[in-house]
Length: 179
Image (cartoon, rainbow, N blue to C red; front, side, top):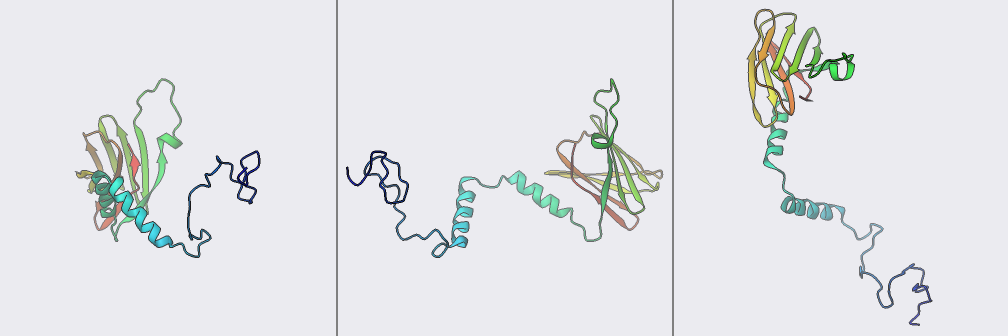
């Protein structure tokens, strides 16, 4: 029976179970144990194919550029020390409660309330400051705190956002969060 037994196996140790006469793809002299295989060439060909078949969306590229622009050599990263989504105690009957966030960087604390009406916050210790609300592909909104460190933004946040605080000679940057 053309060198095959009743199960379609050729008996040559390959374990081929296909129809008679079909011995699968012919890979020629390709050695799959790595001797004749160029990983760098394959990676470059896959990168080019992905660039043609699935290009990077321009909005995503802009988000990456904006995130890199957040990189300040003088900035201190503010640690998220409280998030009401994680640390808060649920209140019975409360619907659409604002999200409360607290960031700390050394002696500077930033308390922020994010709600459907916008952003409300305070810089502690109280001081005038400039706060930039970064929101992905949108341009950064700039807020100014009063002498008590309070600031507001009437525009609701959507998607990822971060805050950059400039007070005196300090620059403090928060991590990116989802509104």
